Length: 124
Image (tube, rainbow, N blue to C red; front, side):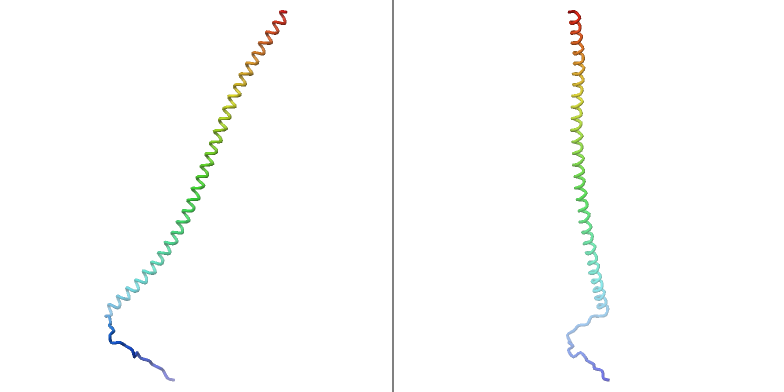
């Protein structure tokens, strides 16, 4: 059994090496950058969900405002109906009073006419 080994044959001498503390700082920065990107994705997701909730709440508010406007319209229509009914009722009461007065007047006049006719018939 034989093992094959390979070596780097194309290494450049122009490469620069960083000191270990600098490499550690670079790694920390890369890791914190990756964490920041992940946090940004989570925040954007939360923002998107919040925007969806706001849209839903806005549609609920809009629907409730429409219902409120409809209720107000219905209440106003009922008020108008009651006002019309009240005016008809007052007119009917007035007409009834007039008819009562006419009835009393006719009754008194009729009694007077009968009395006069009776007196005329008796005196003849």
